[in-house]
Length: 441
Image (cartoon, rainbow, N blue to C red; front, side, top):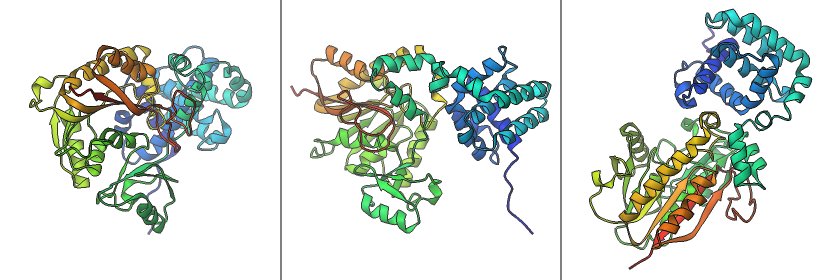
């Protein structure tokens, strides 16, 4: 008797992909939209959705050439999904004729798209006949070429006139899986040997990180369940050592992680130093994730569901030696891992987020003792959320001193010029770090 469970048919996966894309277009995050997909469909659907989102600008430009007037939302999502999957023959996850046939089958089998099945079939058959000509017509469209919204491209061109193409190209590549070694349990050389013994190839990435040659479920990672390693991008691994540098000699070091969920940076602080950490997050459900992270690693911190911008509701009046402010931001630096972000954000969001960041900086600064340090961090490549934000803060706070820190890190390998001299020599996400010290009286 054969007990192997067969994969769901491709037409069912395409139905799920279309539903997820429709929801993202309505403002639902990809994580939430994928959570509504049944478990048997989710792995295949997620891989296809990520592929679609990385080619959505091209797909929408092609659909406009095939049909100036968009069909109903779900049918349009299905059509654009298949165009995204088939426009580049060599990168298609399945044979293009199979994708087209299964897309028509998906349309026919869903009452919501069945009336448009013939239209979808006609558009896709024409696309197969005229693909080279149609793709060539989209080459002069920057949204099609770079698969980012126009405002996003223009903002990067302004912020990084010499590097914007490389940033966009990096965003369209899949991010590697990076791990952080728990300094209390192991080190990089030892864990690399452990991985090799398990048949997993990896390379060292920084003082506490390794990057896997191929992503694996955490259940397959040696020592993950026992707290030996955590999943964390290489750029994110800089936060804890940057903040703690020069402070580890302080007795009973008091540290605040002001926007802590899901707890990766909180845990890294505790792995590197014996300190008292208070971890805040506004959402009680996200605080539960901090608890789970710390429990797996065998670490302890005071976790509070509270608004960091309103210290009067939670602060005990004792000054902190160090504060980590990983502020809410556009997430423009982690598009490789969350390709839906570029299609969810609006240009107006950046100014609103910058206001939130400024308010948090203003609220956190009085909580820091003279001589203490505050690390401002965002997973953003936009200057408004990084360098511009800090320069404005320094102009209004004369007791603040900017210490050597990474500044803007871009989501691709190597140093990209004087503006970001400390870009890591390994594959990592986009981040911004500014280490501020409060002058002693």
